[in-house]
Length: 127
Ligand SMILES: [Cu+2]
Image 1: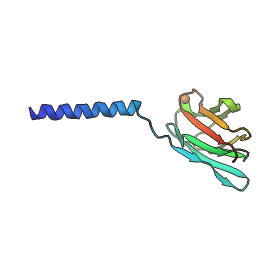
Image 2: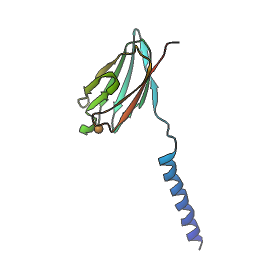
Image 3: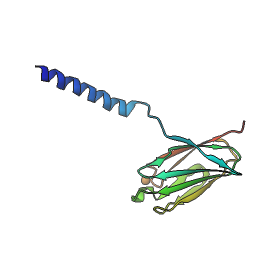
């Protein structure tokens, strides 16, 4: 009898956990590029997705996103910024610099070549 109650409670907790996982708001790893001299730069790790997944840039400062693919799967071997006309190959374990035109503030997306993994780019307007 006691065991049934415990199993029932564990089951309910488990279901709540699954529901939370699917429908809860997940924190997205967000990073702001570091400004060095006249440029802003940020490194993005490509391994089962993008880390950070969301990058914040400043408007009108030349930006470089440095992607390094650690993931062996061919899924992630291209990074595509559809709105910016960028489709860049990412050889494994080789840092690849993607230059971003920051003249226009706004939100942009990037994705793998098959549009399965996604990242977000936010260009913040000048104050
Ligand atoms: Cu893919």
